Image 1 (tube, rainbow, N blue to C red):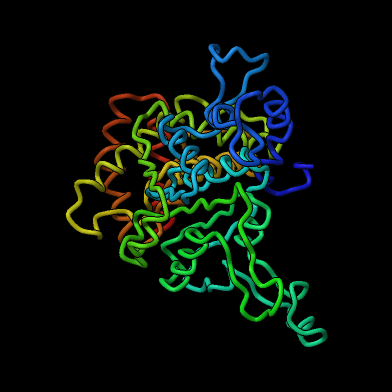
Image 2 (image 1 turned 45 degrees about the vertical axis):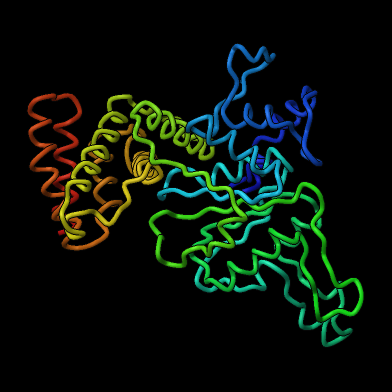
Length: 371
């Protein structure tokens, strides 16, 4: 079934694994959860030898165990969960995995934008049915959040701080009272949340000041702050995991040389250090230099090598992908990258050799092409 989808949700992608975990799970489960808290943690973080399982469960989210445990405990209470952090820290992926493990449905999602309205989190109407038969529960279109309430499952709200304050405020009564009233109807005009309902929201810490959460709404959420991955080993595991998924999805047989992964990780570490010491925004790349953007650079290079190269990932292709992905402003970003290539990559290629000289040349060509 997942082969028929461009991107299968976690509950479809890992359906066989979830079925197996559910079949051996004899621990207590809150509400109508499909898995116990311990098994959910194992599903997300992977199994260890000490777990004594008959099969290995791969790690799917890379981060501190305490973040996952606090998230699960929050959802087992009557509070909402707010995952907050920089872009590319895996907030949405963690929210999807939690929803898939708890209720086997991660698709009840509202995407927060400046255009998100109260209807998107409560309900709207099928206009043609209203004209033909009048307003009724049949002609009502429930939002993903209302659908989650009725089913006693998890609803998700992505980029909560991107939506306006009146939309955010509409969540307060849902999280507090656990029902939505429908004043247009005379009968059957209240939708009550069933046991197991909760909301997982995400917020970008860089959006602070866009539409800050009210104190009332903050009290309805438990905050779990997801830090940027700074450990090189952990970041390498994340990039490798995501890249291997891409290769399987596209049925590409291509090796990822460890030396090129090291070059990518080192380049991002260098550029982050430069951004941290910059004194103005013009001296910083517009890119957040997140782990997700590293994955994007590597995916771009792999696909380019597969379709237009000799199906071998080379340092020159990786350099071109990095420059092309990070040079978003002209001339500011190009000037920053050019400075990095001359001041850091060139000396390193002379000192360390290996793949660095080819990476140097590939970056120079890409910068010259874009200039």
